[in-house]
Amino acid sequence: MLLSIEWDKQIFHKNFLDKDFRRKMSKYLDDKKNSIIRVNRLVDDISSMKDAREMVQAYKVKYELLLKKYEQLDHVFSFHKGIIQNISSGIITTDIKGVITFINKSALALLGYHADDIRGKALSFLFADSAEGIHFSNQAVKARRMFDSQEANLISNDGVVIPIGFSTTPLESSKNGEMEGVIFIFRDIRDIINFRRQMERMDRLATLGELSAGIAHEIRNPLAGIKTSAEVLEESFSPGDFRAQLISRIIKEIDRSNKLLQRFFNFAKPSSPKPGFHYLQNIIDGVFLLMRARFNKYRIKFKAVYEDGLPEIYIDESQFEQVIINLILNAFDAMPDGGNLEIKASFNPTEKVFEEQIAPGYILVEVADDGAGIPPEKIEKIFNPFYTTKSDGVGLGLSICSRLLEENHSRVEVKSEPEKGALFSVYLPYVKNINKESK
Amino acid sequence: MSHRLLIVDDEETITFSLYQSFILAKKDYEVATADSGEAALQKMHEKPFDLIITDIFMPGISGIDLLKQVKQKYPGTEVIVMTAYGSNAKKDEVEQLGALHYVEKPFEMMELRQKVFEILG
Image: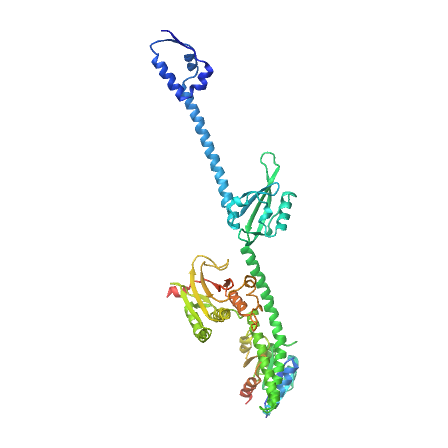
């Protein structure tokens, strides 16, 4: 039998790499091998390639090279993606109309959104003041203005206003360099703003301290003159004389004014602290003993909880006592119908109270009451001098607390909601008691 | 011989009321007043005093300078210092310079008078 197989070259090339085709072909050839007399083009073609296997091998090498290239690219891509997503700054990109096209993880976390909530919204949507947002967005996108260290307020998903510092850069196409949108990079600057406020406050207090020394002199001299004159006059009348009684009232009022002045001066210019190592428990116990009668009178239950192994605190004892007394008196006022007052102390070994603190760690003293609480519009002002909600108060109690703690490199914060009580947190920097260790 | 007491303050109400107070005490003191450190030194130069009560902050020679000069020139003269400053900032300094007492204004006249009685008898 004569069998002649004519293979179309193109069909052969097209199908040669197909396994099934090769298998079928080899089976066919195998079946017919006894009848094959001549193989024309096929042999011709195959022999024109060095070896079919070599060709497959070449493709395989190409494929692996491609795969490797892809992996390299993927690595570069995830590296950049990782940087963009994990950088602590918020990064948002917009298109040429100011519509958000991308938002990174830090920005989402800070603002409390999911990417899907945000993509497609105008950048100005994120600003607390939308007019301001539109202004910045227009300036950056349309006027191509680049902002640097600009400050603004964003608003989070749950309505919290977050002060930020931001910069903007045009996003240019890598192909033709045309502007495709804007990169908006920002950081939460709440800590910086708090720090700045604290510095301003310290500055004001320093001025106040200097001013008060001058005022003290100007007020006390006339007070002393009035008082001594009144005392001399009082002495010249017999004690039962109504004029002597009137004069004794003058003296009493002078003393009252002077006492108020004294309290103000204590606030404006406290004496420099004389810190030492003290057990918090001892100080709190001492204060409680001093105030026990009042706790009973106001029907307030007192509880103190100390974390095991609480380190000693390094502070001016009498100033710290004054802080605790003022915080307790404040709690009393918040609980006119009785209630609970709890003091809780714990140790945080890792964090600092202020930047320059040498060794990390702080002792946290929390004073909690379950009284009337503080409305949000008042909470920011309660540490301001002469701010008071009480008809008979002068508004120095809490401001003296915060002032004395500042003098002792410590800090007080408050959290409260109306009808849910108040929590005052006092942060005292940890100082290692070296003397004690060496003993 | 009666004891001599000098009250020094640029606040006339203070010198006058203290002067009256010591007259009222009927102690047979010779009481004089001066409205400045310079005037006080002039009076001391004429005739020394046993006790000086002086304010710190005055125009011209301050109470502290007066205290220094008095202790140098008249070691036998005692000094009480008054101040209207609301702190004890100068207390240690004036006591080191030899003042017997440091009195904050406004003071209790009776207490001040008692201190003077203890010094002068």
